[in-house]
Length: 426
Image (cartoon, rainbow, N blue to C red; front, side):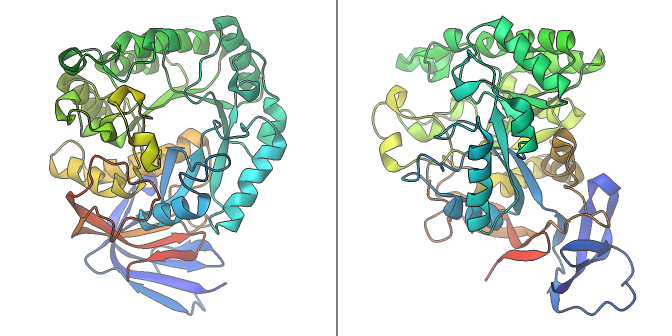
């Protein structure tokens, strides 16, 4: 395998507390040095990163790639190209594929599809229950042995708390992470917007904050009871941030992430009848958004995810409540993180940590850092480059984004995954 040097860049590696001008030396797919040139090193490829930031490749904790089962919407190939263009080198795939990731055979299928797309670092999240029906536990140990990094239930309900307790006990006994998107299905009542001013004005079925916070409370109680490690995904409201802060204070093994769009959009930003703003959990109030931002700045929320959900045009046509929720979000994750830095919400190294080192700690994988011996997963980006979100440069098959047509600042120029150059800006 080739030897690569990335030189003249500002190296920001939060896991190793590095923020300085430095070169990165890569050989046999691994990082071999971030300071001095190793003895006998002869670069086959030189990447000039002058006036650019060099950091670990991004890790996305919440992704749908629409395969297997919904390839009319997107494919592994289309979405991994979008991920590579975005500096993302590791993706976590939710279990609500068709078939559901509830057997080792399906986990193997995921790995095979990833290999065919030439993007092997896709980690399947195993279903907590068989077929995600919420009644019978999956074979978590065999799924872990097949390469699943966690168990989860996507957005599906678990039928009762006893089943959830048994599932979390089973996960804890095998030291498996439970990735929980807190939502009480029955309180949510098939709503499509936050229970507030916007839903009232337009007569839309709504979802109260309590649908999230009650489910969060239940899982926190069971985490304490069972000793299960729990990661709460895609938080959306003020009270959730407060509850996670308290849980961490009292020593529970919990972590949390927020979808990038929740940090930038509220119910006030929704364009009436535009289904690109239809997401779950729904966009909430300005006060909720401020708490999410403060939670990220303080470390209560330690990671940012894309919550990438590409859709075909048919899925987003029709009345707002009849459309499918979700945003195609991989390609906007870097510029939107940089916008948080520009607005003074977080420092740049905090933003990079929320996309690299912190997700790696959640998953307990050797990634998210340019540590010598780790896979050379690297993102090089120009923080000052402007680009427009449009059909000329969009790679995902899903164009369902509320940021379509916007000019954003921050563009990836090179992405390396395990030492392979998988994206280069022409």
